[in-house]
Image 1 (tube, rainbow, N blue to C red):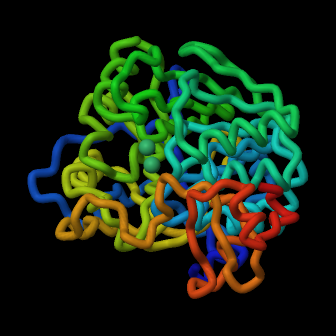
Image 2: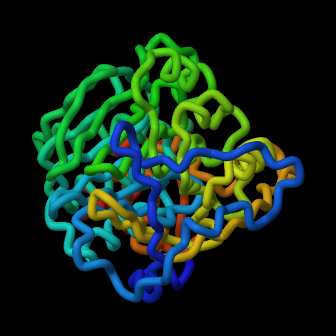
Length: 382
Ligand SMILES: [Zn+2]
Ligand SMILES: [Zn+2]
């Protein structure tokens, strides 16, 4: 885990003056296609004089946490918090620590885009440690251990769960959360069942599409809903299966936040996606290069915690599209600490702190482990 993850976001904030259009959203219109994409593809005038310090009147913020290969976005509006995804297993303790360090005492909304491990493992950790008012979940089921853990902890904590439909709206402080997708849950791919949200705070709009891929994106565009946004959270970690031309045309973002793990085994982000963002003259921020990134808004303007990286380097394509050998086996029910003789759920925060040489994954049952002299962890209560 990188040291700077815990460094408080501070320093220079570039005041980004948005070209506000009163009729729709404040998206900066993309200009004509540039035939020779330059690294500095951002129009100069987007950047006004740098403002030092957090803007006083920024009553809205969105932080993309640096969860490596996964996604976790914390949104704050008028003191209320929403967490959209919690990252994967390895990021769980970091996400929990981030919320504690930033005095997030309660989440108004906890949202899973979809039930893939790199999006929901951290949510389980958060549910164990932070009170949650209500949850928004996609309306499908899956048979993974981590999905079961999520269901269990939602039940244990008696969190009311809403399975929203396209077109539903909810509120977070003065922000409106619009559910723009999925159209339905008939897609073959779970990624396409991702809950897609457009979060509007005054004239500042953000679009989050989880891991939704092209089929779901095209359906969203075809639905005729307003998808325009200032800030686009890049779909599926910059995979070529997402961020279609149609979506970018409909959303017309000025800024893009990309959550992607350094040296991930999937080749994310892909050249196709980066090239599209560049062609649309979108300012790019990415967690693998910059760590956490926060955007602040007062409903009119926005400020960023750092400058865009405009780094268009793609993920390593030569690594095969297989999960790393060190990943937790999908069948693993528990994680053993062979030194302390304790067993844990794979998502327990203690697992991240365990030294590799004492760590062992097992699909043995609870009774078997107890018979072997193991005791249940008091933290995750397996
Ligand atoms: Zn993902
Ligand atoms: Zn996924």
